[in-house]
Image (cartoon, rainbow, N blue to C red):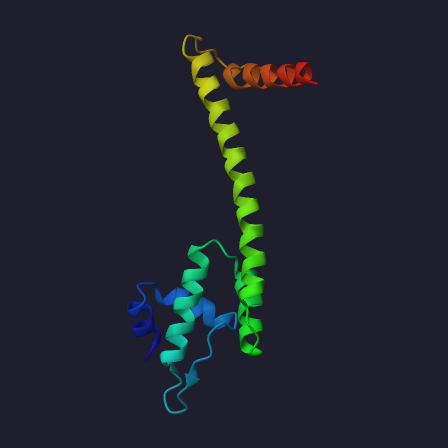
Length: 144
């Protein structure tokens, strides 16, 4: 099957198929007569695996490591377990950072609700942000 057919079969764009081909995850056969790349059922299964792995949060580098083990005929399951734990830890950190950002945004909205608008000066661009940033710096000093 051609790029567009493979893409359609997995509901992705042809550019997605081309990307994974370009980085070596897929190895289509090249037709010598017309130069088109032809993908087979194995390529389709491999791309499906790649898409599932991406959906689980594995990076391209992670998938390369997983595929490398599999291509050697070695079980990639131990690598997958190790990597998913690492990705979960990273996701948890991002989640906590996002929660902290959400709290700061809620606090900003609350503080800014009754503040008046001010024209910029040579010393200030927007007093809402500048005053809020100063408040955060002062609060952090008291936390120590």
